[in-house]
Structure formats: structure tokens, C-alpha cells
Length: 465
Image (tube, rainbow, N blue to C red):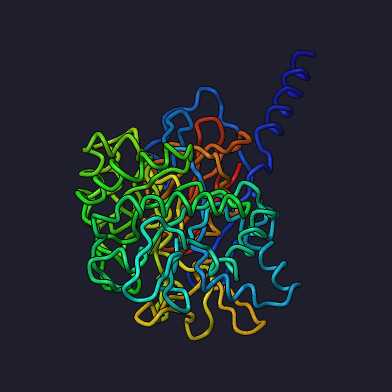
């Protein structure tokens, strides 16, 4: 009798210890696998499991050690991207927008996008919202209008928001109207101090005008790449100028207009974390700043943690990194996943936004002097649409890690395998792993369950359980 009961209990425990409850999604640098789905078994560990931290090829997932909450993943919806998408047939346009912003199994699930305030260098021509004949000025912004954006960008944005009503938008200016600048040109120059109040009002009018169109701007930056004046358009703005502009003009005007749009600082390379730290060290400016944004054309992603450590009460975002015409699929995939996705997330970034959403086969449109080699996540040529490497870079996260996921501690004892982890809003757990080495067999454990899985050489896997 006792033997039978023990045997039945043993069999019950054995069956319950192994369940097919985890799913792995794998993309390889050789392009052969893209989000390949594999069902994995989870093994329930005995309560008296000994320490396995030194076990070979083990990844430890600690859900109790929590960091930042994720706000989303996505791309820049440039004016050029919107133009190309808008020229598709209605059926193809709707299909593509659903693929990008939808939440279904075969969709990207993009949750955060970046747009330009006025033209970026990936518009067909330079424009602002208050362009005037040479020699004229408009300090009261009586001629302010969004007419250029109403042609393609705003219609595409409205469709995107219909598909994903929770879509977040960060907006960045490349240049103010040229009559506000010291050099009277679209490239370089400084913002004339006599127009600080007018330009602050320009931001207010932009946010209010977009809201009237049904588009909520969640955040703005004060200047795209403020230390680079060689783009077209562009503006130079040092940290002292940015602190003064925010503290005395933009912050008070946004507050007076009762706008809750966040102000994000810097929006430039990780080689100069001292820039946002200097602005945040100014108490008058800091009160109006929600956080800082970075690009990684120079510097190291660890700089984000340097800013976090100096001002842990302010968030961090990653807002731009291009993939170029001369890039190689596998190299771009692995570098971006290791440094842009995992690297910035593990250094406190709440959002990861790659650069251009779409370009044509010749990397158009762009302004004269703008980027001539910026590859989109999509190549759109006429009515033909193809997908490029940044589609897979962002998709490895956006398809599986929803808004509201909380980053938690993950430790890999295999130096070739980079990792980050999350507790999802639905209570499930997820990890993103990048294998920079050869074919590898790994064990993932959260202390209660163990998942054995394989990673091909030079690959990335997202596992949800």
C-alpha cells in the first residue's frame, strides 16, 4: 500500500517537473534564421537545489533584483519614410503599417517612434514651421503652421496610432527657422538669444498643433545632435545654452501651457556624458527635465550608467543609430544587438529607437547634404517592400518585450553570451541573449525552473516562459 502511494506520488512529481512552457525565438547572423520559433521544456527544480552559479554555460535570472521599466522599441518615422509609405497602394500601406505597429504574432509590435520637429536630413528638402522670405522675422510666430507635415507624416502617424493607441512619440528638432539663427542658414549656427522665448513658444505651438490633429507628443528633445553642426539641417547648442534655454524658457512655457510632454536632454553621442550631467547639475533646468537621450556613433554605452549614477532620479533613452549602405547584415545585426539593444538596456535605457524606418533603393529621400547612405528598416521602391537588418535588430526585442516590462538581473557565466532579462506585465519572464561565439548549449535558471536551450554560432535568441 505504502509502496503504491510512493510510486504514484513519484510519477506525479516526475510528470509535473517537465512542461513545454517556454518559447525561443532565434535570429542568426548568416541570415538563415529570422525569429525561428522553438518550444522548450521547463524543468521544475527541487526545493533543495544546490548553488549552480558556477555550472558551465549557465545563465542566472534573478527576478527579485529590478531596474528600469521599459517604455518601448522602434524607429524614426522620418518625413521621407512617411512619404514612401504613403505612396504605396492603400492595401499595401495598410498591410505594412499593421506589420509595423500591430501586436500579432507576425507583427513587429513597434511601441515608440521618433519624429522630427520640422525637417530632418531624411526629408526631401529643408523646412521649418515658420519659413519666411529672406530678411523677415516672426517673433510672435503668426505664420506658424504644420502644412509640410500634413502631406504625409501626420496621415501616417494617425493610421499608426489607430493600430496601436498606446504608441509613444518623441520629437526632435534638427534646426529652428533660419531667421532665429546666428548664421541665417539651415546648417550649423547658434540660436540667437533674442529668439529664445520665440523658439520655446515654437515647441509649445508644435505640441498643441499636433494634439489638435489627434497626435500626442510624449516627449521632445531640445536639439538633435547639438554638438554636430555639419548636417543639413542642424544647430549647435552647448550644455550651458541648453540649460539656460530649458530653465528660463522651454520649461516655464510648457508649464504655463499645462503641457505634460517630457523634455529629454542631449540627444547625441555617448562620448560626452558630461553634457547632460552638466545640464542636470543646474537645478533650475533639472526640474523641467525628464531624462537624457543618447546615440552611439562615438563613445561607449556604459556612459549611460555614468549619467544614471550622477542623477538616478532621471531616466535614460536611446534615440538613434543608423545601419548604412556599406554595412554587412551579420556584422550589423550582432553589433547592434550587443551594444544598442542589450548594451543600452543594461545601462538603464528605457527605450531603444533605431534610425530610419524606410528609404528607397538609392537611400532617398534626403536633403542636400543629408545622409546619402542611411538604410531603412524597409526598402520601398515603387510598390515593392523589402526588409533590412534593423527590422531584425528591433524585432528581436519589440516582438516579445512589451511596454511595462521591468528589467531584472541576469548573469551569464559564458563570456561569449551577452544577456538581459525582464519580468513582463502579464507575469511571465523573458530574456534576450546574444551569442558572439560558436554553437553553444546553455542552461537558463530562475531558481525555480531550468530551461535547456541551444544557440547557433553568431545568433540572438529571445526566450519567454
